Length: 79
Image (cartoon, rainbow, N blue to C red):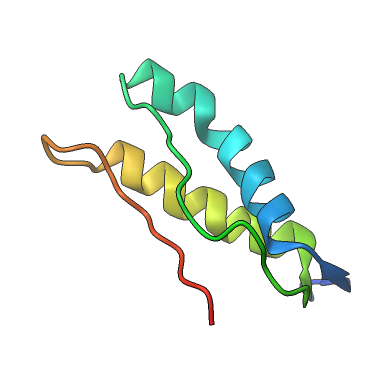
């Protein structure tokens, strides 16, 4: 079986918002408040939307699930 990836131009901020929404319920069930802090503008990127959203959502879910006493913090940087 091959993994199929459809590459397209996309807005990283939009993709990040989609991934955050995927983990928001799990976060609230673990008493974790998701707070987005980062650049307001990103350059468009070419990526496989579904795959990249899955990667970001998995990172967020792991941060919520395996957090220590302090709330998880995931930061973005602009280049």
